[in-house]
Amino acid sequence: MNALWITLLVVLALALVLRWLRPTWYWVTFGVTFAAIRVLIRYRSVMDACGLTVPPARWRLALARVSNRPPPEARSPRILRLRPTSTGLVLRLKLRPGQDAFDFTASSDRLRHSFALHNVVSREIRSGVVELRMTGYDVLKRVRMPAAAVPGGELRVSVALREDGAVHYRDYRQVPHALNVGATQSGKSVYQRTLVAGLAPQNVALVGIDCKNGVELAPLSARFTALADNPDAAAELLAALVEYMGRVYQLIRSEQRISVGLPDAEITADIWDLPAHLRPVPVVLLVDEVAELALAASRADEARRDRIVTHLVRLSQLGRAAGIYLEVCGQRFGSELGKGITMLRAQLTGRTAHRVNDETSANMAFGDISPDAVLAAVQIDKNRPGTAVAGDSSGGWSRIRAPHTTLRRAVDTCNAHAHRTPAIPELEPFRPAPPVRVLTGKVQPKNASAPAF
Image 1 (tube, rainbow, N blue to C red):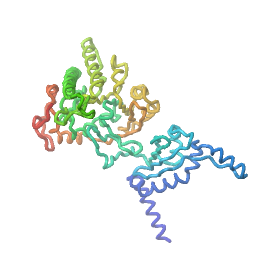
Image 2: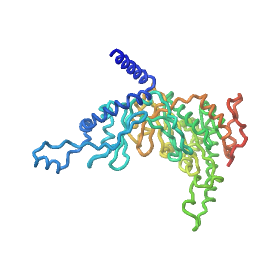
Image 3: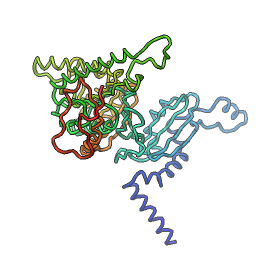
Image 4: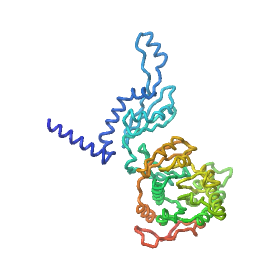
């Protein structure tokens, strides 16, 4: 008997230690079993309490009256599957006639409390089928990217972990341009650093504009094809990028080969359907602190500002087909920055908002997309840097948190892949100078075997 109590105490102590130090291990070993039993036992009562049931069919009521039996209970959605994951449970439900998937989204908080889980996210899989992704613990408290978080495609980077335990990807092929806003010390720069480190091993040209004298992007310059660290250089760099875009369009036009006998699949209007030997390298333009590009203190500054905004709008409108993608960052991004800013914002499909100092800043990112996302961005805790709300123009959004990528790690990654930096003739005057000090890792010379277009 004493041995049994000792064993139980050891197991309990082990569970408490795992829950504090390794929540994922605790969930896999103990938590998932208890949570699954709790969900199955409470399912019918929770559905009824949350108003997610439908009254019985009329023929059932009539049959109960004829047979003098008690009336049947309200019907809950039918469980199709309950699947455990490393971070929670996935419950797939078949809706009853008359039910709406929006009702489950509106009841997410009540379901979370009723099932005693950390978070519940609802999404519609197909007509009549809803999936509830339930998280057993706070996966954003200590972010650990899963080992399987591989890019899985060109221009697709795993940058953060979502609150439902899934990996958040930045996919430039699906969402060409994005806006990233956030206050000082909110984790915006770390997110950008993680993005650069993820793009460094890929076949892509990185172009940066960092008006803070290059303190954010200059350490990563070994992997950058072009870099501007002040508004005057930024204006010239954007003009050169627009010129390069025009040359790419001329190539696409010359290689369309539209004829009667040409298969439809071989007709192209962007770089991705061109032959591999002719396809230009895609370009990702990262703009850090966009407000510095829009500030004007004199008439000359206003002329420069108009040129910069015009070039950015042109790149956002026309750049996708030419393989040019924008990642615009800033603390504020609204109409107070001047003419053309709202037009630029309308072209930035992806939206990411880190912790902001006021609701107006959150409205700049999500006001035209989702009021719920605005509220979630305002509620981000200042003690959790890197936490953000990510969404797009479709209205969908989720909380994410990027892993803490140190500057040393990002620099080493860029140095190790410096030989992948392509050469673009129009951008050659803006090629960053190599660092003076000796770099760690195997780094090829800047001009050695650099692909050109």
